[in-house]
Image (cartoon, rainbow, N blue to C red; front, side):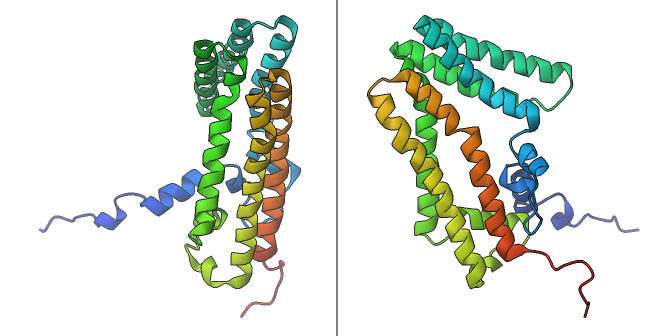
Length: 240
């Protein structure tokens, strides 16, 4: 009797499936294209209440401690201690610690850089670099006519690259990509002059305002734009 052999194509999820699954865990993947975004889905996209706290408190802690003490060491160690506590709480409660671990890693790099240079404004340099890289990647995707939001939505809907042949979809996805270029550019326009001039308190405060709140607003608008061309037919529509 011949041995049965598994089809190599069925051995496991392919690259597209794996990438699609990863994208569904991102903010823009929290609402299926065509569905109506809700306040609950928006909150889920930024990590829920816990994720919101973990995103805001370290930066707020830096601002408060630095404003009160004008001392670099406690200002960078306090946010780091908070992020470690967040990880510990997630481990104890057996919730996914990936976001908290990422927070510790990012805060640790920022703190180390500021301590090495002795400049408190360098605590924000990694964030500025991330904004530069993000804006550059988005602009390159537009330059090569593969707008990044379109690529992401294509994976989320299992549509692949079919959106490129649909004029309406392509136009909206290009617009959505430009929207995110605008977000990262706005952050740079505001933060870089403050960084260069060493205005640490203003930099810390405006970074908070341009962080989660603005991200959530742009995410909401992106969902609405995508829904305009991916809206599902109304329930009860006549079939074929």
